[in-house]
Length: 181
Length: 181
Picture (tube, one colour):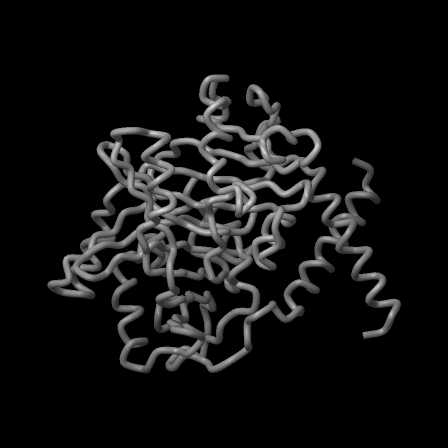
């Protein structure tokens, strides 16, 4: 590749990233900040790349979950680099799972006798964020935490539980999720 | 926004998309094509945006799953526009789920007595693609199908089952997954 073409491409990529960062994300209000950490819902987080998926079960709780990362977080996950760099943000999206009758009907035809059951994402439960800023959040492992339900942050008591819960994952920079390959 | 700035931004976005399309994705070989439809693994699919997540259970089968879409597919999902435009590609990533002992330990402390169990993505099972080309794949609803395990396409018998299975979803352009909000 010619040097000037590489230069143009790098400039274009940088400019577009800057523009993407500045652009308001569709449907995401730049609303209320979560207590303690002052974290707001990051614009465009729903469009971030996938870290992994999981599901949670127990009593009445049945959730399907996805973890997304901004570019800095995804790069660090892929390269296995710890600690995460300042500016990395991880989003955890939690949905109530619902049994999919339409999927199950198809599965019963495609795989007769297998008894396959499909559970898909229903209504949103909450969205959580971890924002890396090693100076601002030095007292909590360099991470600011936030939990939103229907766009509204949870209360201070809830946010006091975040770091305590993540502390056991100290050797992975307080992050539980691993990148799914 | 000034008209010339809007023009520059559109030009930049178009150029960057073209570059992103041309760039080889890290770790994705442009390998063997799947039988019948001739679909290869699309470069960079792991970086596509999230459509939804789900999990599948039945007998020995326990999987966590994510559906990702390229830009055309995601746009159509968001806008609820059917049929999907030519060029839209949907990727279905399937992993064996594994019970996460480390997550469960933390959950037991954070939510004592709730009996919460976390199931995360383990080894990859397979990756499936649906590629929209209304002319090329006119006989199968405009979709080409492909199923890869460890980067290798499944055989012809397997690929013969794809459209038959998707046919009941005709009123949603043969796509089961719904966009998770």
